[in-house]
Length: 232
Image 1 (cartoon, rainbow, N blue to C red):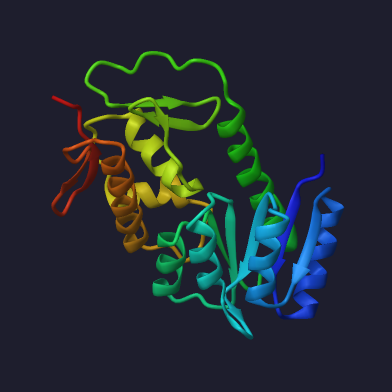
Image 2: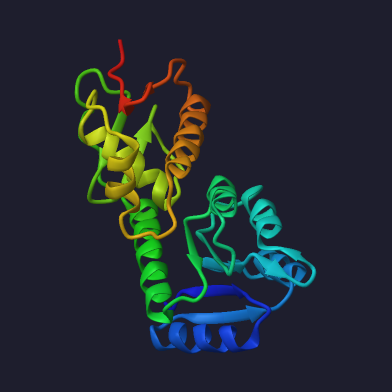
């Protein structure tokens, strides 16, 4: 079955270019120009992934993302001419899976969309039981399905949240500097800074607390970086 893509973009030329590229890659694309149209479409005909332009005539892609995140873990990619750090951090803190800055390569956008959908499908469909967690670890990493389980529940993680937590999980107690994490996790993403790492650590800690972990599993090492702590 062809995957359905919701494209919110008010510039017709950009929309036409992406529409053509995504259709050529086997996706069904529904293009809307307004935030309210995007939310109506998501409510009545939920897509498999949304590409949201940040600046649209009747609001913001950020607002659309906030509304979607109240009820759905739909994969979301922001598409925007803004490249300021604060906009990137805000988009990722809202739960976006990726962030593409204009001008961009349509083929790159298609590749990112395909990668996000592949990871999302693997996490949802994975049925094989997890191997027991190593002694002292409260989390379980399933590399094949690209999922992480905490207290018997699969964590709902964005692309970069998963990659960051998986990196720490593979080497518990090892201290990773922010620059190392940016290279390992965001190596293919431009316009990334150490604030992006800090923002994702904050989000991960909140999600782990929601799963009942009382102490901070991700530890901060002043002027050094982050590590994953073994439980007592």
